[in-house]
Length: 161
Image 1 (cartoon, rainbow, N blue to C red):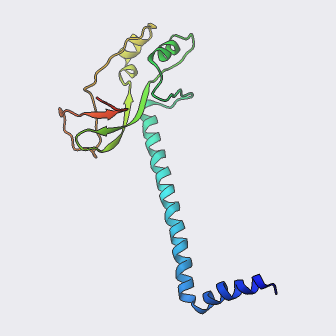
Image 2: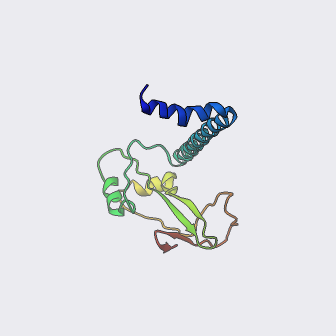
């Protein structure tokens, strides 16, 4: 037997065989740690998938998605809407914002719900780029303690809104 193999048996396997309870508990702890990491990874993936499906049910599923760091310029969206193809354009903003009052980071999703109404489709079908901006319409989920009519300041991309 080679000297390395003898050394491996003396330093590694013999102490493991002498203390079977400690060996078993160590193996169980490693297996439990791997299982916890895997469970957290799966739960995070399931939550992200649920969030994505909720967003698709609200804003519609897209065959093609255009994204850009800092957003897609308004001029690009206007040029796409004037193309002679049967395109349905649904602008959507997905960013993280910081609530100024609490310092809590929350996901912020902006949808053009007016464009989904019959009146909005009639306005946008003329090829124009009419933009309706209301910066005081915000819906918050149950996790934020704000009531209707409350003023909310969000920090988005280093600017207060």
